[in-house]
Amino acid sequence: MPEDHAVTDSPAGDVPTVFEGIVRQRCLAATYNRTEVTLAPHVIYTRHGDLFIDGVVLERDGRPPKELKLGTFKLAGLTGLRLTPRAFKANPLFSPSDPKYGDSVLMTVELG
Image (cartoon, rainbow, N blue to C red; front, side, top):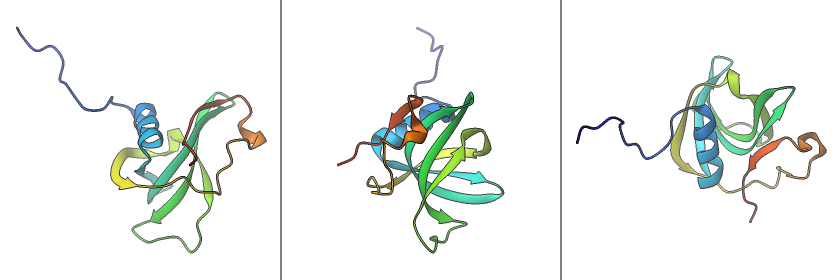
């Protein structure tokens, strides 16, 4: 029987990669505004028809930030997006009940 499709562990594409990072609590790496970032994705949502991710940046160009904060990233602006083996725990900076998310949330990290 010929093989028509390659079998992979994960679906391909940016949105499934973000979903996997959120569900498995694994960091994402990408280039954003010409800077290599590693971030802990906490939520993916829509705003004005575009997809956004809010996450905690853990590294910028290989260095930790001066302070941890929750940043907003337009998914289309994250190039070379990939899942990393680095695990993270949900950060208390993230509030799933923040009014900015309204009813546009596609997926959030489990708080625990």
